[in-house]
Image 1: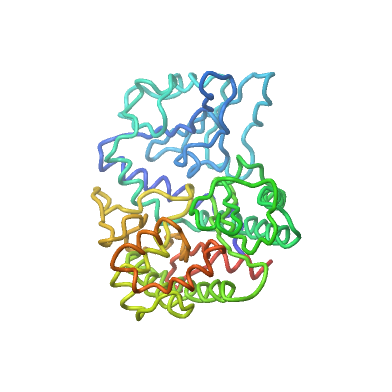
Image 2: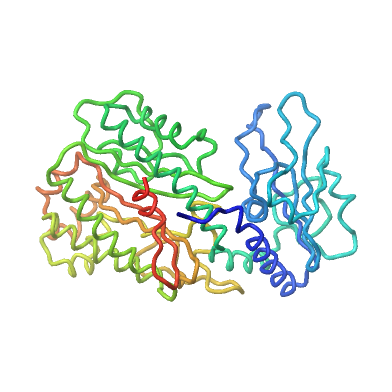
Length: 437
């Protein structure tokens, strides 16, 4: 049973404040203003996009609170300037409540510009978030060196943040199970999506990213973005990549389900076993690039076992054959953003830690630390354009084309878990939630 996030919020806020204090001191700032952001309008329209708060604001405040601000000066209680408009077109938000509010001084305002009356003019302020009339001239917006320091530390999640991701994962797993049931009951991609949202208890705009609900060949499109309203006859495969959120923190889960047994179902099982071996590498001190390279070795073994390659697994890696079937990175940081910031950073002063040669799409190259939350998501796909390229180069003779052609209609398989690196070993939030369900 995961801890209650509410009981951990105070320690989380203290950690966020300590990180901010260190970064402010290093960069010569005396205070920090964090803007939640404002709803944005569609072009030439008076309707807004769904609001999503600045992730830095959500690190301090568990509610989205548009047009609100956190004001922090080291040694003082943080101030929450909470916008509660006098509005009859839309329902104004309730004043903030819950145990977390006790850590703040709270000022409820009708106009975001009231921030200017509440912030002292003397200190050198840094402002995180989009430009707005309320913050104009108050300080430096998004100073790069300060952001680099904050982004560097954000990779290590506090116990509160892990507890929030665990709650999100519980909702996500519940919804994944409902989606699988709908698939087996004959639903279309669109209907599987609706079943997912209902089980997650979320509108589309409340999900951390757009659901990928892919049948058969659509599973070979890595970020497949459509939802067919009609179900074709003879559907073989559902690949579902979908998450859920809690207090701004997300989960990111992928499963691949087959309608029947056979060679493709065997491929799914083999990749699942390989994925669990890779999860075992998620430990503090591990270079995440090593996990990615190990994933290619694992995928080579899966391809060999399925009869999809004619060469030994080591040769499949060396000759770039695995990249035909597994073209993306093994995973990324996870947290307030699905692809959380700081994955390629060399250190708190900036710089980039390079990707392995020949692997341009890896999103995380850092050494894992205590509390790093990452995804582990190997895949095997039958992507026409990549296979066509391989037919015309030196990889042609290494691929068993008859076996590939037999599995092309199945699209592909991806298995993705969310894992936290701890001194005690990998904590797999996704498998925990599936086991509990």
